[in-house]
Image (cartoon, rainbow, N blue to C red; front, side):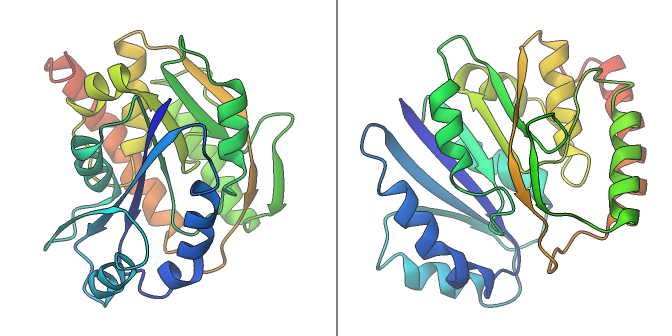
Length: 238
């Protein structure tokens, strides 16, 4: 199998040096599969661009970057445009979902899979460090609202998702949401296009340095759910 790993980054001049050696130590140790890694610099205004440039002298990876911050959804779409793998995976630079969860994906992935997503809310999921009660409550509320469009999904925003090339081209090619609601949009489009979504339990560790302002994210994402429905009615997702 050939995998494209997409890692979006925004103002991550500190996290990249903290985690990049672990990332490449892990993926360079996988010899049975061809793996390309793509960092997408989403308009960072700190030294992220310079840090990535420095590490390119040590590791082999691609960098996609642009000047204006567009949002994680936009960044991942840009990464998908450059991806050449049979399977496209994205996760966050904070490694809240440990890299070893990729091994679980490899063990269970079959040719018939189209979309495989990590979930923190399945029976065998393991939360190593929880969010605050408020963040958990708001996250669960957003899941219930998102379930109106996409029933049966236990966790929309876990930053560990895998798409077959066929599903990625079909889904990302028509996706519109750039920011917080993009995860739900991807799974909504998958549903509309009748791509099966398989959920797998993952380990997860909350990062205290999370940039997500969860209340604002839930409010903005809820507004974007209405936009998704309008997009569907207008035929944008065909």
